[in-house]
Image 1 (cartoon, rainbow, N blue to C red):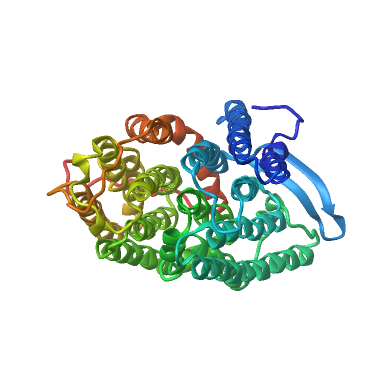
Image 2 (cartoon, rainbow, N blue to C red; image 1 turned 135 degrees about the horizontal axis):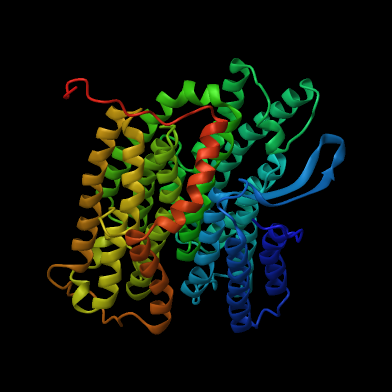
Length: 510
C-alpha cells in the first residue's frame, strides 16, 4: 500500500491545467510549438499516472492516495481526492488516450478565426477536468468537475467541429447541464440529510454511512440517476450523442465517447448503489429494461446509418446498455464486467473513431457511400479498421469479448430474461460492424475514390497502441480485473448486495 503523504492526485489533476495555460500563453504563430508542448505534457501526465498505478496496492484499503483539504469550511466542503480500482483504471485510460488523441489531431485546430493553440489548450483543460471527476471523493467537488468538464468540450465541438457543430454543441451542453441541475438538487438533499443526522458533510465516506429513509432515497437517487443517464447516455436520454459524436473533431469525439460518457456509468457505481441501496434495488427493473432497449435500439439504428461517425456513436448506445445491465444486476461478476467494459469500450470505439478520422482526412467525407473497395488502395488502414471493428463486436480474442462475457455471466442469475435479449444484441453488433466494413472496404473499387495514401508513420504510431491493447486485453485481462474486482466487491457490500449462491440440481444423484 502506498504510504506517501505527497498529494499525487492533486498534482495529476492540476498538471494538465498548467499545461493548458502554458499552451494558451504561446504566441499565435507558434503552432508547431503548441503541438509539441501539448504532446510532451500529455506524456508527462502519463508518466505520473503510471507512477500512481504502480504504487496502488490491490490488497490494501479501497481508497488510496487520499488527500483532503478544507475548501468551504462552513458547509463541510473539502478538496477531497482518492482513488479506488474503478477510478484508477479510468484515469489510466485517460492518460493512455490523450497522447494518442493529440497525435491524431496534429492537423486539426485551424477553423475560421480559432487558433491551433486554443484547440490544444482546450484538450489539456478537458483532460484536467476528466481526471478530477474520477478522483474526487467530495460529492460537491465531484459535481463541480462534472459540470466544468462540459466547458472545454462545448468549445471543442462548437468551434472546431463539423458542419452542424453549433447545433450539436448547444444540444450537448443543455442536455448535460439540465442533468447536472437534477444532481445538484440531490447533492443538496444529501447535505440536508447529513445535517439532520448531526454531521453535515459532502464527503463520500461520511455520506455512505448515513441511514437514509427509503422514500427519501428514491428522490435523491432520481437526481443522480437522471444526470448519469444523460451523461452515459442511457436510452431514452441518448439523443444528444449521435449529433455530438458526428460533429466533434475526431480527437474530441474519441474523448467524448471513450471517456466522458463513462462518468455516467462510473456515477452509477460510485454514488447510486452505495448511497441509495434501497432505491437502487427498487428502480433496478426499470433501469434493466432501459438498458435492454438501448442494446437493441442502438444496434438497429446503427445498421441504418449512412454516416460512419453517427454509426459509431449509435453503437455506443448499445454498448452502454450492456454496461448498465452489468451494474444493476448487483453481482460482482456483472459489476466487474461493466467496469472492464468501460475501459474496453474506450479502446475499441476510440480506435474506430481514429480510423474513421484517417478515412475522412483522405476522402473529405464520412459518408459510407463515398467509399467502397477502399481496401484495394489502403490495405493497412483496412486492416486496423477490421481489427477495431472486431473488438467493437466483441469477437473472442479481442478485449471487449471478456467484458461482455462477464456482464452476461453476472447478470444471468438475477436478470435471465434481460440477459437472453441482450445476447441478441451481440448478433446485431456483428451485422452493423461487418456491413460498415463491407460497404467501405470491400467490393468493387469506387471509381470516384481519389488516390489515397495508406497509413502514414504518424498514423501508425497513433493506432498501434490501441491495437496492441485490444489484443493484449483480449488474451490477458487478469491484471486489469485484479485491480477492478476489490473495488466492485466493496461497492456491492456498501449496497447490501451479495452474489447468488449456486444451488445443486435437485434432480441429480443423491
